[in-house]
Length: 328
Image 1 (cartoon, rainbow, N blue to C red):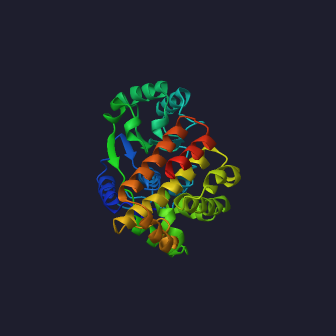
Image 2: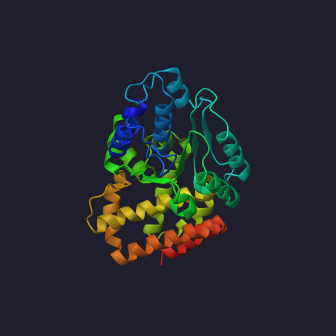
Image 3: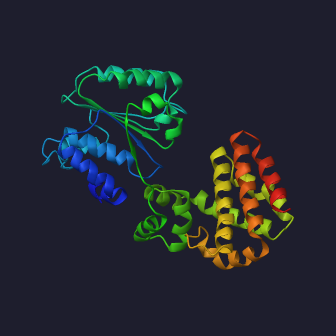
């Protein structure tokens, strides 16, 4: 699907509203697009950028086929500047360079567009520098700030942007799309719990490390829920050799959390999508071994382990302690 079709699928209401805004030439000078990954924030900013630069579209809408449109969507147009974090943050020097670009006229047009991804990762200096620009914009320019964590952005920056919330896709809608891509229900059911992005889901599904991670996690979960003492040793023999990096440690806890979530849903007979749909028979048996209170406690134990990881506590120690907590 082209970008217009994708946006109409991802965010039908927002796309309709922005289409009207573009047609009426009423775009604001600064927007903050907030929502989880995979909801179309970047695609919308590029489509709007193309609408400002396209020379062949009708009613001010981008044609998506002319040279300007193609270069915008291919991230090659000189008047569309995209900024992403350098390492873990957006540095003050990046914003200074941005402001310098704002003060110049467009290379090929009178319009300049700036897209800043993960804007919540700006350093304090960068945020304050950006604030000064938002207070006193120069020239014919539009800025799109993209974030997944609105609460981490300075209130003064929030107040100077038009805030736009991007709704997450429903799990059933995302599953249906993944099925059209050739994934089975069993494959899609776990992926839709981990991401709201079709592209990321497909990438995960094709990742050999992730496929093995699923098997290891499920084995660990069955050992723990059956009160098997091997679950403690399993941390050293199977968990740590496979889950080596910090992101992998977080992924493990996400996967084990979803397993307990499935047990909770089955215990209370809720109708949401099961993450481990392929193991529904096993989950049906496991739920009989737990009270609702015990399942909730297990979920809290896993979430507490996640907090410990974020505090840089040794991962193996966190996982071993989690086993002891879960097997009480």
